[in-house]
Length: 279
Length: 263
Figure 1: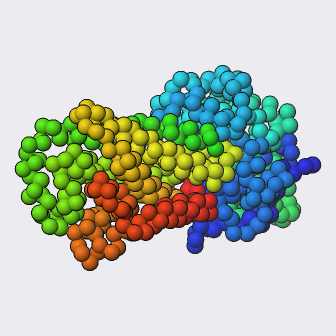
Figure 2 (figure 1 turned 180 degrees about the vertical axis):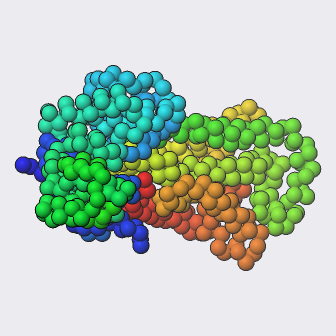
Figure 3 (figure 1 turned 30 degrees about the vertical axis):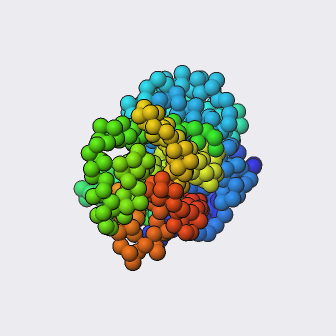
């Protein structure tokens, strides 16, 4: 399948501060790719490097077949990006911001913008300074989608959006993806990844620790073990031989025991607590 | 690129208008005050012209403030010089850094526009704002002369306004460089630089030892007293102003297109 994003050994530091190190992954055409990690894991640094906001020290980023370091203007013509901070010029009206974004692109996006504003219930007559975070996010969604890009990049898109709008937002993504678009969804909200994404990458402290299909991440050979023994409750992921696990458990006075497939949340927490690079 | 240029002019229209009406209006009022002060000014003119370095600094040793040209050069020359320098610094110092300071950079630069094009559009917007400011202020001053029924010194007025425009472009260019290098808007720093440059010019005219270095300051190309006394600007002052303006603008391009944008 055609690779829409291909990142190889991306390294970016901010002076002595850590940015990202040796990050490699690819996003294939037509997929919704989850980019997971808590705040500060390096997700935004990776995205900002892809879009030409940051100059990275090493590695290669190709977006839509073009070099992110050299062709970022041509890349951005075909990308719809929604930053985590939806901030615009406060004195402008919503309609002016949306039109300005279309004007800079040199496109007439009026029909698509109207459709999006209608579905997301955006009040285009309000001034930006009058908008709540959620409403600014809606404007940001319209600006990212109105030109019908081939690739969507969303950085923490749903913070501040009410559940109904979140639902509409993901419906829109699915519709565009059905028509051939690709989506990179950076988030720390695991249910979003589980529900909407085909594959996901997990970032930790500037490094990519796992990339796989969401299905594989959830249905790993690892099992989530929850037990209560000697009045103590424990919960952990176990990925070794089941017979060894049974032998180990038989030495305890068990009060309660469940062994089940782990949720994405369990796997994610496991990576963060244990520092393991694979389950 | 044209969309960014138009956007910048639109966003800054109110501040351009306020500064223009304030400086131009003050100049206009100063000109109108000439007739009511004419008698008193005549009495003061002689003593003002014999105040040594102070007279030199404000041009009263080269022109008599008892004449409308002398009055315009000393009074309006100072008001316009200081006012326009502060406007240029104010206008240019936020032009690039406001995108990072206000966190709007991620929106702007997620649109398909190369950074150098954004810098160019914003630079042209500054120049356009300065030209508008100069033209409207010039119209105010001409109107002042017309209201008094005085002959308009066309050539000197044009030289004065063009000199001021060049001086403003130089200060704006330096402020633009400050704006490119900083993720925060350094308006205080830019205004401070414009005031230091003004003080440098005053000192250059007061202190004999500094006279030879006057040409380095932007104000040296637009000294109203020299212009209305039909004197030449200090040697090399115009080439230096042009070179500094171009170098600072080029510096802004280089710095801004190479830096990491703050989120």
